[in-house]
Length: 311
Image (cartoon, rainbow, N blue to C red):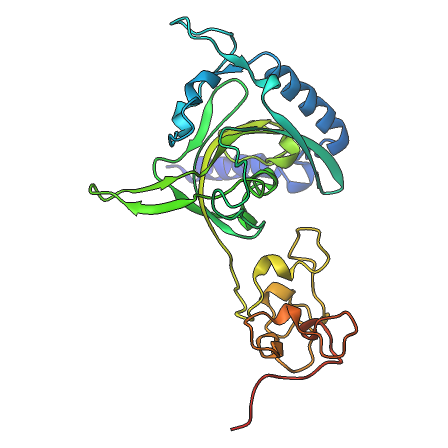
């Protein structure tokens, strides 16, 4: 190619790139909506949905049966194509409230396996537990965005806040897992229901792909099991490391060493590991208060007694 034309091309390219400098690039960042204002919109939308949609209540008449999330059918009519009668969601749900990031939220739950007597069902999960669960999530328009085929184990620390609020109110399975001949496992008398969450207890303005911003979410679920965690191996389960009781384990740092309690093997920084401040050796350091000042030893830097013996 002629050198004159090469020079012209280079000059044109330099001019083109020079016209698009970073200083001239317009990047528009849309701030998140006000959570209080959005909650009003979300709640109105959820209430309207619950007052105009129906579910197949009569299908769940056998109290001895173990039903599946796939058995729950929600439609916008009191009868289906076969003439089966459905009941209004609004007449069968209960409302509860939660606070997240300084905003109060209303959310709604359809409990399809209420435990009526103490002792029935397994233990309720704590807000930091890992749970075994089957679920399907969908939008108010009916589009599903996520589901499980087999039970998955998920940490409630890593899920949307609405799950922690709802699942703590449900029992885990009374029986199970029971190994079946085909290699699968089964459970009996487990937590079973549907949760209806405002966007503020879901993904709000930062949803994953496939979910629009500010979407209310609905989950059908079967709750099978729960297990606590203790990542610092200090004999204090993670949910009990929430010293201030706000269900946020990332803001509890008793000794101010920059290591939050649930990851700190010496919570009060007194040089005696938390697990060794279990003076009565019952496996629970939270009930030992040697100086009777109302502060358990493992959180009291002035109490340095240890259950370790020399030699």
